Amino acid sequence: MVLRVGLLVVALAGLLLLQLVRGERLRQESLVDSPHAPQAAAHVRAGDTVHYTGAVLEYEPYITWTEEGGEAILMENVKVIAEYAAVAKEMGADILVAPEYGLHGLDMHVLVPDELLSFTQTVPDPRDLVVPCTATSDLGQATAIKALSCSALENQMYLVVDVSEKTPCDSSTSCPPSGSVLHNTQVVFDRNGTVIARLCWFESRLSEVRVVINFANTFTAIGLADSNLMYPTTIRSQLGSSYTPTSGKGSLAGSRDPSRVPLDSPQVCFDIAFGHPGLFNVDSRGVRDVAMSTAWVDIMPFLIAPSVQNGWSRGLGVNLLVSGHHRPERSKLGSGIYRGASDLEHDYVYDVESGSRLIVSEVETVASVGGRRPPRRPSRSHGVAPPEAKRGSRLPRRDHLVYYDDLSNYTQVVLQKGDSQVVQHAEACHDDGLCCHLAYTPVGNLTYSLLAYSGVVVQGFGTYQIYAQICTVVWCRSEDVATCGQLGDLPGADAFPAFTIYADFAVDHVYPAMFTRDLALVENDLYDYSCDDQRSCTISTSAAVPELMTAGFYGRWYERDP
Image (tube, rainbow, N blue to C red; front, side, top):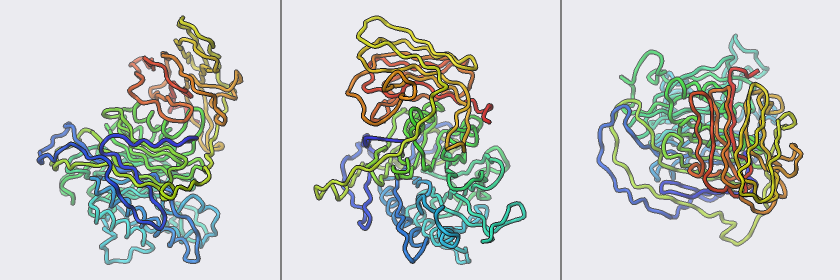
């Protein structure tokens, strides 16, 4: 979502942040050494705590059109992603997730058909377990697929990448003059470069599946995510024949890779807001780790990228690996690794000025089935300073496009101002029996409001309609609800005193949200969040929160989505 001032979290051993400069190969500088010594390999049983190292790439792709056409753009971005993969592997990464539209950028819709088709690739059917890097048969227009397969094979790591896939028309689809249908497709390569899964957007219903992959000779649950902002279709997931759905036939026996990790839950960028397929697999299959490619759009005052990603991770108790497209002028930025299934820590980047960044971090999870745990490798944190900083020059600050929710139908209760030692109580109610309660101590002269809403929320210029129950405290420029959460010239520093906000919801899934006016997450350990079996949810802080923008709940009533 949107960040007005850049926040770059560089914390904890095992976190890697890299700046990629066009025309200049990645250079590394060791910053922190991990004190952990290698450990001997050991057998792992289902249910054991295990660790893997995940990598996500915030990436601003090369998009300059030349007479060489779309393939030249594809291959330049493939080269850069492969360089990042090599660096991530040196840091011990088991998987790298690249962003949505990361191979060609966001402007394909302005191209004529022949130019558009030059960006597309033919993706092998995962059921055939093809290794494009070493395949001798004709794979069609698959130069980028071959190179990515070679990168996965060379680095012995899993690679999740979005491509524009071209497939021939069939009897079930209307056929354009080109004779081909285009899909926004997420492709998964295993350590051998094999295409083991693809997530396509073209069928009329969602398919919940599970792919088995290997991170570190241990087995855990990882989910896929992708977005369909350019392709107005729904998804179909295909798996390799030995990578079977956990609820279907087959098992790990007889697969090529004797030690793999389950990769679950195909899920789309904005499908993080929907019940299928990601949430379904979390609730029904015990998925604990989800990998997500996105080109997110920031919407204030609730749906900025880090808040949505952290809230989903914490609310569901899952680890979330998010790779985001970086183009703040189009409202696109934000990537991170959110460890909601373990220590609630997060390593993320949400910085208008960051350009491309790589984040590598160790993740704790639970083994799904038995396997061998390899020795733990020491990890280091690396970084590369942008050349502009080294030269002492400074580029103009980039714009950050932010959209705003229509709050006109929300119930608003303006909170008291002034300094008081007396705890005050506020209540805001809306439809469906939703009532939000806040206990707080007034301090200062800034305007804060308690907002409540239950009903349909329209996003994406009418593309998406979701039913939500929302209960939040929001900073406002004035007592006019339309000014709540508005960016621009922000007030000076203040601190919202310790508070408790709670509500009884009619929904089963309620996600926490708390961030400041510079759009930085409030650390998870600074507030308590809980929901009981009666759908009563509480957020409380024991200390004041500096420069609070939003704090509260975003509940989803999936069954009522239009």
